[in-house]
Length: 256
Image (cartoon, rainbow, N blue to C red; front, side):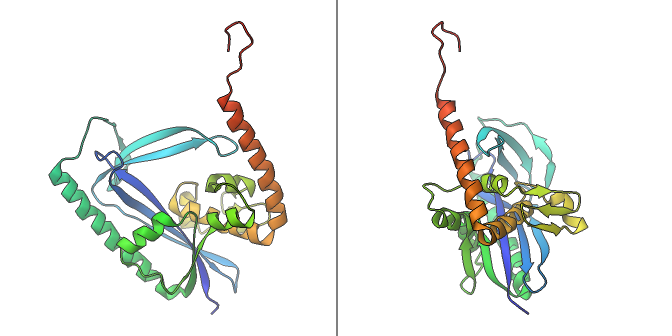
């Protein structure tokens, strides 16, 4: 069997009452590509432990530029129930100690999850901005020495000689990433989704972002000239809007 590639994404949240001072992994998603058959398999895990977390979600415009943020407070054991945010709330000493125990428990859960992937004959792990995932693997004692480690965000910056990194939201727009009833698509590719995962394949869910990474990887390396063309158009428009947002028009009569 030809070695496979795993696209890995993790989502994180701040523990409520620590003002983002303590972070915890809340889920991991993995998309595995089997090159012999050009097929995908999906796996993931939510870390459903009883602790309140604070999760920020960025709202972006049609070019992937952040326009506002939304905050959710919820318990990992019951993520569907949102709680009111109190900015004056601070976690006490005993609760912080318990929070550290919970984080350690999630790291054990992550280690077990990754060990279960050993049977998949994976030789490459692909991330998008890998720093947090790799740090978490170290804390969880997940050994990655035997894998080829790739950072897709870094590859895009280096390959196209960009001044800055480009976000996954933005490169997904460039590649026309789309989610249908039963497929994920990009400008040149389409793959069928397993039914049990279809409701999870969405941006900013770990398994959904892993799927976005996979299609971006294909577009970048199989259609680099087309990707570059779309990337340059996108960056020009993105920068134009940034400049426009910093300028306040004044027609001389005090009206904006």
